[in-house]
Image 1: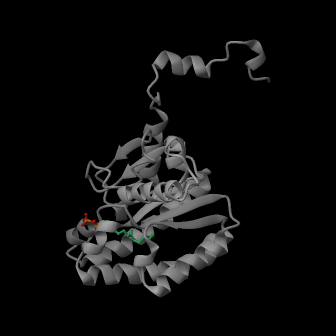
Image 2: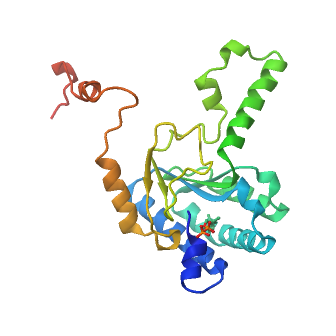
Length: 241
Ligand code: FPP
């Protein structure tokens, strides 16, 4: 969700005005996913590196975060959204950690939309935590090093119970992933737009989905192999009317 600061600067307003407008764009996105049956949405709200921003901006972002949690959770629960947070939770204040926990508990039974908020999150940190957890099991004799493969690492990475993202969207014109879901994005389609996050709306999201729908995902195979996989070779596999 990049571009809040520039959005505000273009209006000669403080950066926080951009972040507040950014929080409204989050709601637009959630509405879109609910209407269109998109089952999982992961938002990069605050990176591990964002702690290094000026204290005033970090403090104001934390306030915005806490307010959003207090304001939105009841409605999210009502609409069938399951909220989860990924990242280093212990770095947040006690009240924010408590609200995060409450939001997760309160919405844990929902399945319509998985809304994952990456907060104090870093993809490398995520992979390192998975490696540490595997190493602990090896040291304790619960796991053999030979058992460490992609499946074992994938099972200990954030959001392991969800399929990897189909589509990654970055707003604000920068062409990089910036330490977001590094493991999970291996075969994700990437989509970039110059639109600043507060201006991100349903039309732009639709444009991203249209572009995604026109792409061919080959996962390292040839185009012919992908077509063969999708075409029933035997009539018993053919869809029935
Ligand atoms: C990046 O824009 C945005 C952030 C670091 C904060 C994102 C937060 C929100 C959208 C609002 C709160 C979200 C939730 C889930 C309640 P930037 O500041 O880097 O913009 P710039 O590159 O133009 O300076």
